[in-house]
Image (tube, rainbow, N blue to C red):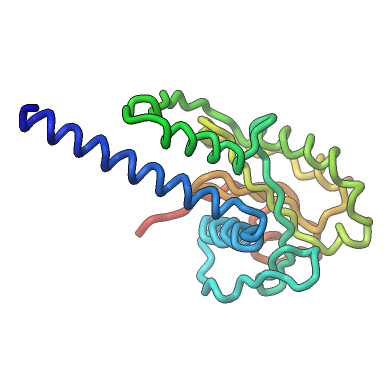
Length: 211
């Protein structure tokens, strides 16, 4: 075997080792025991995107559910918006099995074809979710919760654009309704009683700034 082929083989082996290790870590992270950690992560990124100065210790998993996470006077309840039929934990297990069974890194590579999604389209998805599970919470509970959707759609990137009108979200009875999508935070609705940092940003999408 030539030196070039030996180097190529070592690089392939290193890639596979790194990929397998990363997938094992993802499987552990998305297990049920790490639910609270994932919820806090969503809130951290959501607040970071809003440009609010804070310390991560201010975000605390609640002893009483709901809410999932308490941040200052916000009571965050976290929901995921995923591609239909997608199960992240199972997804990583399947990918790990592929990684364990192959010696060819090319098998694990997938073509990424990003699609734009607008705030209006995100709003439509959130409306569907609100109709699906809203009745699981009593009206008095919803009125004191700040709902944050973690929009984790494969191959979708947010395109800057107009936000949906706030009034279409008000009938659902939540104190506020927002979303996290990548580097963006979107505040769709905030009642008068919502935390001021949400009420002041209602109807806006804010991208995280990097100094």
